[in-house]
Structures are given as structure tokens and as C-alpha cells.
Image (cartoon, rainbow, N blue to C red; front, top):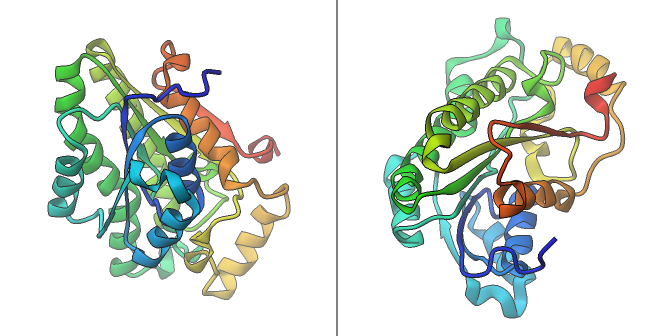
Length: 252
């Protein structure tokens, strides 16, 4: 591995205020990247900047909602005409709510953050990547992208959709030099827990069956290392890949 493999390159990281997004910002900056980080949580981004310390000048932090197209446009404008890596990390869960109990507002919010925002962010960077002759998009999906037992209906459906989006981009834009890959974490020590607590007895019972096979939680940097590798030239022959990083949970 080249320690400064992103030297002179620009990256956008969503969900930069905590967990995997924060760890990805820290890793990419240490590997030489100029990073534009974004998150809805301004306090979280301040915490990321504090952790960066002397490396903070290499990061621009923007507070806003990535489901808002105007904010997506702002992020890309700040990053500049060429984005070498887009890391779609931001995501929320759905309290394990099953289909018969979900309300439209929860469905719309989860799908909006986990899938539609990923589409909009990726769409926004594609023209610059194509013009530059290459670039990488790495999207955080989930163990729930592979089956139905890991979460509720909105989260599961949105993460299945992410895989289709990732593969579409790989197929259509791979010939233009743009690589699109996904990382599928299992349990990770992140702040997503606020949207993970089950809200119905049925959800608690069904979630319990899934969690019974769950292994130890990963650290955010374990997932960030996979994002960094997929976004670097070390994985130039990898496109449309689904990289599972769940400690073997999906094998159960």
C-alpha cells in the first residue's frame, strides 16, 4: 500500500460527522487527499475537525441535508471540477419496522437518505469524472443488501436498491474510466443506533433472530480502509464489486 495514495486528489465524503464517514475522512486526509466532508450534524463535523488536528486545513466541512438537490450541487461546487473519489457513506436505519407497520414519512426519509441521495451525489460527480477520464465511487451498502433479515422494510429495500445503482454505474460508466463499487458492513460501532432501536414488539422479535448470529462489531476504520482501497489505484481492475466486510455474519 502506498501511504500517500491520494496525494493531489480530491474526495467527497458524506456522513462525515461520525462513524464510518468520520473515519473515512481521517484516513483519506492522512493518505494525502483534499476532502470535502458533509453531514446533517454540524456538531459531529466539528468533532471530526477536532480529531483531524493539524490536518484540518485539508478538509472543507459542509452542514446540510444530502436529500436536498441544492445542497448536493453546493458540495460538488466546493469540491471543484474534478472529484477523484466519491464516498457515499451517509445512511440511516428504520427502527426495524416491518411493511405492515411502516408509515410513508419513515419510508420516504430512509429511502431518500440511503438511495435517492446516493443517486444524486453520484449523478453530480459523473460529468467531471468522465471529462477527466476516470474516477471512483464507493458506496456503503449493508449486510441487509444480501437478504431480508438484517433490518426493517425501508432499510432493506433501500440497501438492495443501492446494489442495483452501484452495478448500473459500473456497467455504463466503466468504459469511460469510472469505477463503482460497494462495501457491505455488518455491525459497526457508529452513531446509526439512534435510528436502529426497534419500535414494535414484532420488530423486536424478528430483529432478535437476526442479531443472534451477529458477530463482534467492527471499528469504523475497518470499513474506511475498504473504502480507501476501493477508491485508490490499487483496485483499478475492480469495478461493480460487492465487498462484504461483516466479520462473516452473512455466512450464517
